[in-house]
Image (cartoon, rainbow, N blue to C red):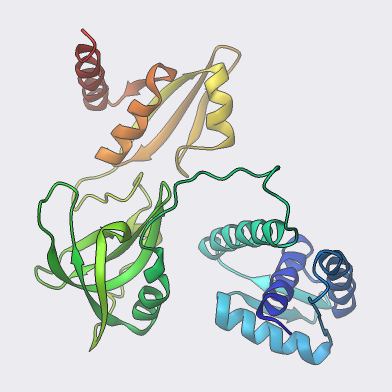
Length: 306
């Protein structure tokens, strides 16, 4: 069977158990058979063999490859996914990617119906090596060139995690020169080398917690997150409700004139740039320090046209 066939079967098992926990083997078999009938209409080379023995092997490989734990409940007489909240978020992203992959792979004539942005993130060719280094705790070396510097320099880093933000990817890790935790854009990284030198990831480091109150890739070394109050007109508010600015977003007022939300965030350059990009569709109500920063930025922008 092709690699695509295996991966498709893994994802269908996970997708079925997400939609219907405690599914029996027969329910899984029926679901997979029906889905593969559709796939094979588009790709005749795609084959599948599914049995009790295959299912047990798939469960082990799903755990090894994707970190998803599938267990059998004797009480409920079916299989289910045992996962934490953070694992559930990763699962949702993975299923989105799987659905998109199948949509793009099952037909050869999608160009009239799907139009992608021509921009593509740079640096993703290093993904495999970076994930290998993170999982096996190998230090890495690379040349790094900041946008505001004329000449780049070599960095030695203990990599902890990969992070995505606005169609760019970053490696988060400890700078071995000064011991600080830093973030490096993959599009500015060259000549990557995976060394044989091992490191220990700090036991108290958690990528979810590290960025919990951050918008973007900047995480302040000190200071506490602040409460932000933002006001949108009702029309713009519909977009903000369907695609929240941040996971801490709470609705304070929602009527025919205004959507007012509350967030808990560090005030960083990334956040300010996001608010400025919304123009007159947003009004910052609190905190006052942020109100003043946004006012000054808009005043400077206005002077460019006078």
